Image (cartoon, rainbow, N blue to C red; front, side, top):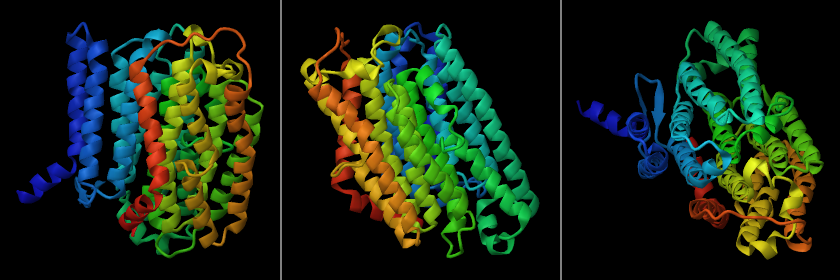
Amino acid sequence: MLNNIQEFYNILPLIILGGGILISLCIEMYSKKSESILPWISIIIFLAVGFYSLMTVDSVSIVMQNMMATGGIVNVFFFIFTFGAAVVSLLAIDYLKKYGAYFGEFYLLLQSSVLGMMLMASAKDLFMIFLGLEVMSVSFYALAGLNRKRLKANEAALKYFLLGAFATGFIVYGIALIYGTAHTTSLNLIASRFLALKGNLLFDAGILLFLVGFSFKIAAFPFHMWVPDVYEGSASVVAGLFSTGGKAAAFSAIIVTVGVLFTQGTSNVFEPYLAVIAVFSMLFGSIVAISQTNIKRMLAYSSIAHAGYMIIGLAAGNYEGIAGVIFYLAAYTFMNLGAFGIVALIEGKEEANLDLKSYAGLSSRSPFLAALLAIFMFSLAGIPPFAGFFGKYYVFIAAIKAHLTWLAIIGVLSSVISVYFYLRVVVLMYFNNAEGELKLEKSNTGLLAVVISVLFVIVLGIAPGAIINMITSFLR
């Protein structure tokens, strides 16, 4: 009985969010003011889950018939997902009116997608990962095409759905091969038998297909083809969610699956695959982003490059690499959400002001917004003392410890290239004259979301050591 009560408390974050979805559904069905009520209900639910996850971060356990884990890095991921979603909810309150998709269903889909993310991060079984992936993905497909009157939104939703389904096929086939050789879908049992299974052609092929499928989800080269069009066609706040929460959830699935295998003192047999896609993702994303004139497409190619930096931590195959990836995900979530948040604030009706030229002279029109965007650009570029610098630093150090110094050097070179297109935005804002009139619609909730994001970026940059030590302690 006591064990059942403790298990209930351990999975309370999932219960709170699941209950919140049911309550939100009832509000949407029976209230005529659901569009104005649901944002705040969603924010309360996300903050409650996030704070509870932080308070119970030490309650490490395996629950639900060994299907799920709680505490430790699982709760760290819960915090990243829920606080990121709370920021998205704040941004969406005024933005959705301007975008023409002021529907209560947005918040239901947002809550459902976060539930899927949490199931993936807490999974101790391959089927639980698949369940979480589908809950998240179906919600994302609907969010991409939220405003069906916009042709670009319809195109984005269709492309995301078709390529997402294609990627899921790889994952399912990979799970089938893993099950066929390991005779179990339990990650703990697979890890305990890893030394015996390693070298089995079908098992290795299963893991490789699993990684390929999730390479689509994290937008790594050459599985990135959907990213620019989907980010450009989706609402700005939705694109921000895809690039942060969706990417973090996919990385969490990779970490709970292959991270368990790679950090057991055995050689990382998938190091060549991970190293190659890391190199191509970093260089391709950074170089192609230079030629972009639409800020959402620029941030889309930037997200491909950042996926490459994070894959370096996986290629390292050590505790430092995994901890570095988790820290990087936390930093990237808030700096990219902040950048997309400012894009959403500046964006006009009918997708106006998305060209980089629209940001010329922003410092004279809105000095505060310009300063906030400059901080996000510096952080994304990896300039100290912001969180983005330390995210890259930790994965590069992990690569050096794993004798992958060449990979860290390429990462540094890619970062140097990326400085150009990030600082180009800052130069436009502060050193170029405004072209035409830029009408900014006031949004206090949107501005609050951006300020919260910038505070996280600064705090993660001030105390990175304490956070990375905490994450590493949960991994060992």
